[in-house]
Amino acid sequence: MKFALVGDSHTQIIFPNLIPLLEQDGNVVVYSKPKAGWTLQKHIDNNLELELKESKPDVVVFSLGGNNRDLSKDYIKTVNRGIRIARKSGAKDIYWVSPMFSLDEEVERRHKWTHIELKNKLPIYLVKYINVRPLTKDGFKSDNVHFTNSKYKELANYIYKKLPKRFYIPDKLKPILYGGIGYYIFTIIQKKVLK
Image 1 (cartoon, rainbow, N blue to C red):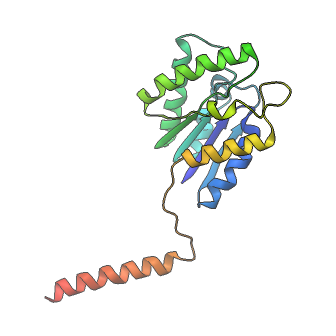
Image 2: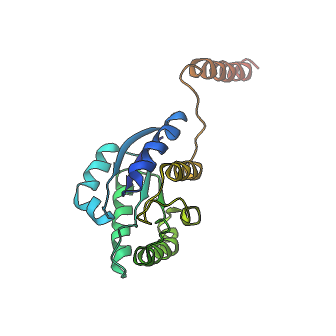
Image 3: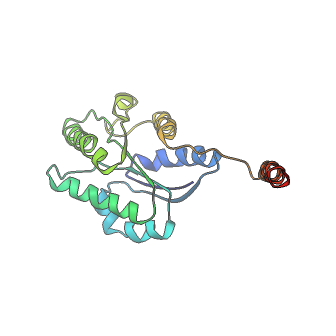
């Protein structure tokens, strides 16, 4: 499968840990854009639609919301626009990683509001929500917002386990498997025709 990854500062460490996990299953990451301080709207304003369209992903993973300051009904309109862009690019599956927990009171107020909004509204748009908040109550750096590398690695592994898996056949085995299946199908057809 082809994956597109769209994120904020947390994903500057999560995505480099997530990509090898996806690739070990035979997936290809066709797009990865982790940007510190960026919101979904900032990604949209900076060519998200064109870049996703050119990438043609099967799966889009958004890990955004931590920088959301729009605590109004308009926020979900922006989210809906991002979802439409992802679907228009050809994505069959869309996943959204929740905002992290924060020890900074003001940041946590925004993260919690955004989390509740996304958790309640994303199912309407058939988007799968990956709630990482329970895993992010420890492992903070001194800013009380970002995390240690080991915590980010743990988060990458957790996110990976929530993403879709397809049966993967290594290229070296394909001729053997397909040849065997082809021979089997041919044998069945031949037996039926000769009866």
